[in-house]
Length: 131
Image (cartoon, rainbow, N blue to C red; front, top):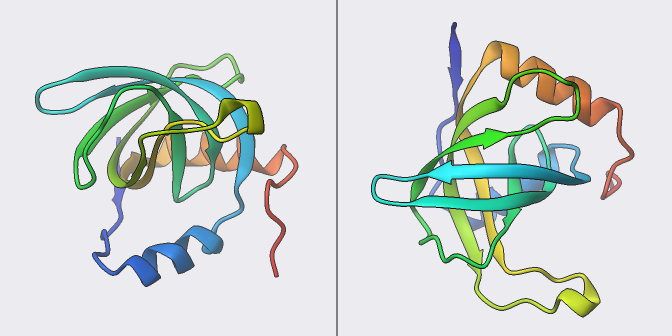
């Protein structure tokens, strides 16, 4: 199983631009995460080929590397990836659709899982339309 690695950027402007580089879709997918010392559960609220937003009440520090397992509705095995937490939202406003959680960018994902993710995203309406 070959893996494709992504070079994380420290520059916040580069992260913002990269976020727009990929087509992002709204989802409700179960996610489990593990870091060096913790286990977390949440759900992906939106996802792209470059990363995802994980809605969770649990705090995950910016800069933390997490191993993800994401349940896609294609009936296949859990999608596995490694991601870097880029930003954290401690408080949300669920009544207005603003959930607590964090944004993370994929830094490693198997080619087969990337292909499944791309196919899933292509089958959905985009959350944000390209400019």
